[in-house]
Length: 206
Image (cartoon, rainbow, N blue to C red; front, side, top):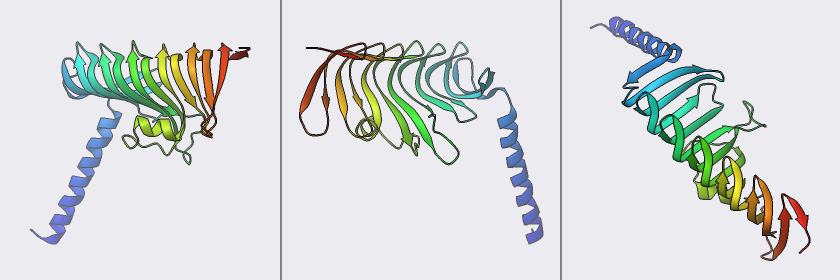
């Protein structure tokens, strides 16, 4: 085969490959595998935009382990599902308020889910710069970002938990509906604990 023919064939293969990828990106529905009961790739149109799910299905619903992403890159969840809802252990990251094409900043949650909401033990980190999937652990987020680590109930801080600010100051104590409630203490990096009592984020006398 001449060099010219090899070049032509290479170009044709490249064009066909690009066309195939473009077609897959544009299609809606089950693109690959078994999207009823098995493993598959499903693209759907929602009110928020197009989503793509790669993972396990049961009775046509997300069930088992899978990854759901909004194709605009605004939000991704990877973890366990039960009949279409986040359930069990999972990680979700979504663009922070300060996100831009030049500032890759995300809010990241790693922990337990029940009925599509954060429930149980977990860590919610805020304004994580240069977030890259699978690069940083939950422990790294706790030690290096502004975050809350502790118990959740229906997406709120609820139970025992620790909030860490960006300057390293922490508050550990009780929380109800996302607010400090009950006994707790601040640590300012000096090793000395400053005890407080709160009622729904309002400090009260001992």
